[in-house]
Image (cartoon, helix red, strand yellow):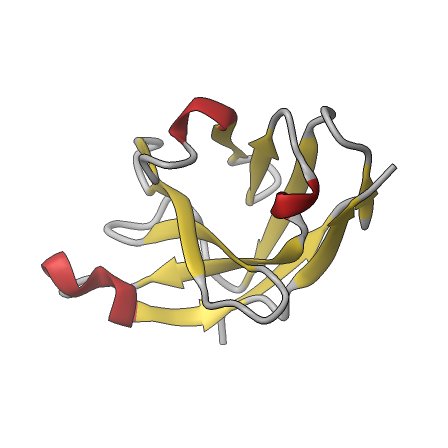
Length: 125
């Protein structure tokens, strides 16, 4: 079974950069044609897709977050990372990494077959 695990600081100060790492086990982030995503859930709210890095390194971001979001990867460590800059308390959320399998096309949201357990990041001074 593919396993994903988020890691990083649980507390970030406003205006700073939130940085999280997703470590993938029993699966390669370069395997065709999977994609690797970041999703978050603020307290009491729904899931929000943030962005993705594909097996070939291509990245795509939610339009609402694009200006502040960067996703990268380290293939030697089988990890991909999230950086969210200029954070505010509105960015407080549980952050998840997840894989999307192949064959879902425009229904990719429903193809997130493996998830990390999530990590809470609080933005507070």
